[in-house]
Amino acid sequence: MTRTPSADVVMERLLEEAVREFPGWAFSRGRSGWTAVSGDVRLTGRSLAALRARLRVRPLDRSPAQPGR
Image (cartoon, rainbow, N blue to C red; front, top):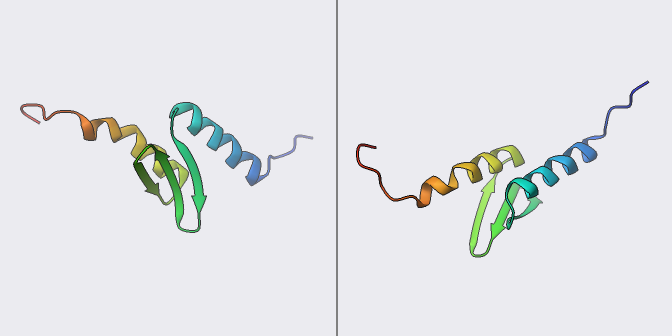
C-alpha cells in the first residue's frame, strides 16, 4: 500500500523547489502568508504559489518600457 505524504512533507518539497527556482531568495511563512526576501527587496503573497507567480513576473517590473506596449 502506498502512503500519502503528509502536508508538511509536501510543503517542504514545494519550498525546496522555490529555493531552486529562485536562487538568492529566502522564503518564510508567517501568519498572513509567505514572504520572499532578496537583499533589500521584500515580496509577500497569501500562498507560496502566489508568491512564486509574483517572482516569475518580477523581472518584467525592471525592464525598460518597450514601444507599442
